[in-house]
Each structure stands twice: as structure tokens, then as C-alpha cells.
Length: 514
Image (cartoon, rainbow, N blue to C red; front, side, top):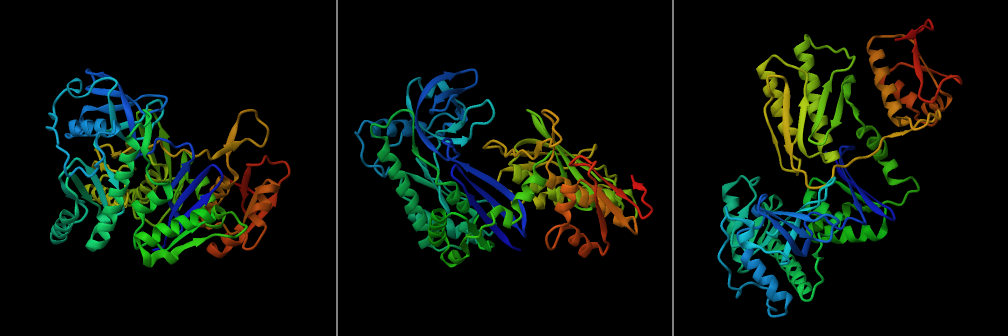
């Protein structure tokens, strides 16, 4: 399995494409104006408490106040507030917490008005970026994430990732981490820490403690509100969260970013430093790796899949709806039930990819093709769970309902990735939009595959001269690829009278194939 991270840099943003065996499975953008990223810590002012919601609105500098619920305050809030007040006024210059007297924990079922007051200073962390009309969601239970560990100030708990299943390894990690954790801090051990030596864990912990100290130094006379601890740049944070020994290549087209990433990989995985490469070809990096084409064909309302099947993805304010369609396909399955299972399994794989690719969150309802066999429904459910196993966002999948629906909840912490794939109509109709030409070529290819299966001897494709040229020029041309794959030659006839996106197929007698 090839796992590649392709990074494209431009003047105003950086794009990250994660490929698995050449197929795009994750796409993220880092924009210069992203000042409220998940993980950022702000020194902020409580604006007002709302007892009816048991929450407070906090001014973090965004156009809309951030939302802080009572359950996101954390039990050690009084200790944190006291610490912030003393550090901000210069009365406390020891940030280690080893001699800091902790206050009594807050009542877990208490009221917001009992613990915080308007105009009070507080340290808060972004846990959900601004989405649509809502401001950021924040927490005052701080955590600083590293490669192997997460440092939690004002805590004494050592927690181990649930994905580490070996009890002996869990005990080993807990024992090691407990021996190196400074007093007044808790630690969460991440999954990638499995099998790591104490020196690697300690190096990561010291780095996190250094970031905590640097943040505390900024609190003295800090402007309210202001960012006092920024999440590391997107390149490093993505590598921190997804990088592992299965990566085969990291390709970057910007020299300064290349040096930065190479340095980071050298720190976290010295043996993998050689997989970081600087891309220097004149062909744009996303064109070279086929990412641009995949973006165009993956983000539309309709998503094509293998064997003529397709998904229709609709978005509403409350939820996302995905409809699975078998299309006009024929296969060797013995009956309708087998066909339904085959299409549903293909759809489940593509749907798991789409959720990661678009970063869809909230409630997702999937309308699979109905299956009468309970064993088939169980097979589909297990397959979907397996496909979503690598998804880093927290999610929950319910078994298929009697109506063939599967409901999924997926953690939403940032706005959904939304890429426009339709283009202005080249035929000059005001305001009208049509599919991008590259999507049209995918559509023609799928329809041809269906015709080849029906054993048409000779097929002529009538299309606009521009599309005809796109299909026939270069080597190997798209038409040549069709021939190599299906051993059938398609005659392409340019038609001046056709609009740009119009096309028809004729059989050997010149009759149009419907």
C-alpha cells in the first residue's frame, strides 16, 4: 500500500492531499486568515453568563462571541482562574505548578453563575471552529497535543488511548509516563506511542512543557482577547496526527516548507527523513499526481463509482443525506439481492472516503439499496465500520434500519470542505452552470463501459470538436486508454453543430444508441 502526502503551496494558502494507492482520501487547506483553529489557546474575557443555557459567551476576538458550556469548564476551573490572575499581574513567575496550591473542584452539576463572572479573564481553547453563523466553541479544560502525548495542565490523570489493546503495553506506558510527568500535570498517551521507548516519550513531553512555559510568559500584560498559544502550522499538525510507518512519500513544491517538514520528520521519525522530497517539475504538482482531476470528480452533488453505480449527496442545515443508486448496470450476479449487496459494499467504501474528503460532520443518513437478507445487512454494516476505522474524527454508526437506512454521527470541529465543481455555461446562458468538462469525460467513460458490456461491435462517439480533440490528442490519449482496457476501438466524430457538452453514441449502422 502506497500512502503519499502531496503538499501544494501558493501565496495565500497551502493545500494538503493524502493519497492511498493513488486515490485521494483526505484534502485540507491552510489559509492565512485562519486565526481560530482547533487547539488555539486565547486569553479572553467572559462577556456574559446565560443561566438558561448554563453557558457563557466569551469574547475571543472573533466577530461572534465564543460559546462556553458549563460541562466544558473542566473540574479544575477555580485553580486555572487563580493561576491566570496571578500570572497576568506578575505575582507568579513559576509556571511549573509543582508548588501551586490547587482550589477545590467545581460541582459537575453546578450552575455557570456560581463559578464565573462577567468581565473575568480566562484561558480558553478552541474545540470547534466557527461554522456557518455560529462563533467558535471553546473549553477551559486545556490540552497541548504532541506526537506521542497530550499534556493536560491542572490534572493528575494518566490516560492511555483505547486503541492500544495490549494490557501489558498499556501498563508499561502508564508506568513510564507516570515516572516522567511533572507534578500538577496529567497526560493522555496517544495510539502512536505504542512500543516507543521512554527517551522518545520524554523528549515529546519536554517539548510540550516548553510550549506551556512559553504560553505562560505571554500572559503577563497580555492584551485581552489575544492568542497566547497557536496550534502548530497545518503541515506539522497533519504530520503529527496522521504520519506513521506506512507513509511512503511526502512531496512538497515549496522549498521553505520542504525544509520545515524535513526538519519535523527528522525529529519524529529520523529513519523516514528520506521520503520527504522537493517537487521541481514545471507541471503543477496536483496535475502530476492526478489530484486536480480527482477533486473535480469527487466534490460534486453526484459521485460516480465502479460498475456504473453512483452516490447523490445532498446537504441541509440539519443533516446530510446520501442516496445509493445502482445506475443502468448489468453484472453476473444471480439475483437482485446479490446485485444490491455488491453495489452497497462499493458505496460504503466510497462513502467512507467522501466523509473524510469533505470533512462532513453532524448527522449523516445513508439510503442504501434495500436488502431482504439479514446476513447481507450485517455484512454491509461490518464493512462500513471497517472502512471508517481509519477516520480520525469521532463517529458512531447505527445498524441498518428496516427501511435500509444507516445513520451516522460524525464529529464536526471545522467547516465542511466545499469545492465548486460546476462551471459557467460556455454556451453563453446567463447565470447557468454546467458540469466541468473533466466530469463530462468521466461520464462518457462510464457510459462507454456499459455499452462495451452489451457487446456493441462498433461504437461512434459524436461530440463537440474541443471534446473530440481532448479525447484523441497526446499519447496515450484517453481513446487509446479505452482501447488498451477494453480491446475495442471507438471512432470519435467531431460535430460542429453540437454545444460544448453535447454528445451521442451511434452503433455500426449509424443509429443513435439510447
